Image (tube, rainbow, N blue to C red; front, top):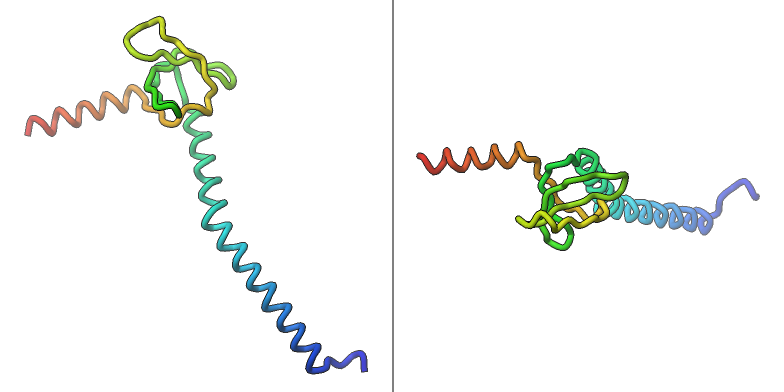
Length: 117
């Protein structure tokens, strides 16, 4: 008698399987909506910080825009404004955006071309 499933045992097994399927679907939705995009953004930021070079224009989490003048392992020295004495060391993670000097020149060239037309 132990080998045969009764109707109650079959219903409880079905309900457990359906409950586990619902949990699996909820976990998959959370992964694709929250965790996956966050990991993708972290990888993108790591690539940007790895490509950081002296002379790049950066924007910090505080909204300050400056030029990188020195790079250490996890620290960067950024020069802000026209005053050459305003040099602030900061952690690399405080950098939000990086603009290469070549990109700025190309953008300025595109803007001047569109004004001529």
